Length: 430
Image: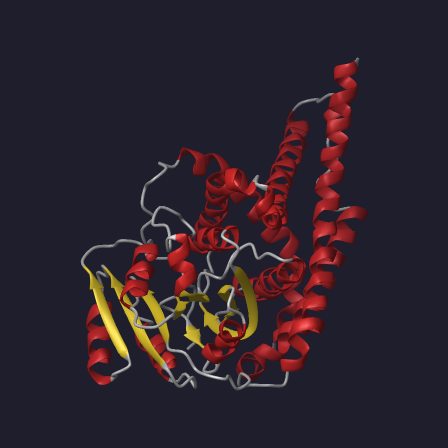
């Protein structure tokens, strides 16, 4: 009787948690993001160029590349247009098998700001970043992916944080999706605003950032040296370096005006592989750093840790409920564990409305950053119509990848190096 009572309580808790967790987090993120805008962002909204600095330290823009022959020229040409006065570019060709190396050598002959390093074999993004950091003559690094287009004023916006904050170890930028020709592309436009942009604003308000954006972030070399640089065995080097820095009491900030235009997967297969790697990277980081977080001195990281573990618990709760519903269609299950329906009812409508409110708030915050690009693509709010599919498509994807990532991450060989795997980048709009 007691066991039945306990089981019934646990099942009721799981049902409530599956419903209330996304609602609670959505409003927590919205409140934090609006507060961030009011406190840090609004005074710079109308400024295109960063405020003048008392001095302009040297910056190395680091671009790791693996088989980027289709994107290398555009990426480097955009970097050369930076309005910041004191920078160079370091491109790392990480064992490319296409014409990436030849293109970089050609560009290097034409542009004095560009230096190129060729690695004989595929060593992985972390090794490429470490190589660039060690050969750079500058104290600050801006790191972007080989298919990304950095905004002309981004470096200046990054540097205002470092110059004015001696404990700032990293600043994460604002990646914007530029391929939006398919439904998956349109959904990701909303995701990068409503999830990534909104969460980073919120987390910065509450004290700690889960991760810098691997596609576009800036670092202080002293902080990198303090924590041992990037870890070659980690699947998501961005999560790893973020947790390492913050555990060592370095500050990480978010800069929404440090824009970067990126390509994202536009096939289910490509999206699955990307999100599975992200989820596995989070599990890896938790497994590696959880013992260190138990210290009272690391308490400011507890909220990040709790948030991640809660998201994993939510994914497994949803997976169990869906499995019970499927089994209930085949077998007659006890009333205690029977899930009558997974079709959204009144609770699904509340979650859906909350999701649309969240996306609306995020679009209001981010629309100004897409103004120039949106003239060609129809505006950020043009994708709002498609966001009704977001809870179904992306919550389902994130649930499945998280459930699969947990055992997969624990089965992975502990010190196996994470090397490049060419991703699906969708349809390039240029």
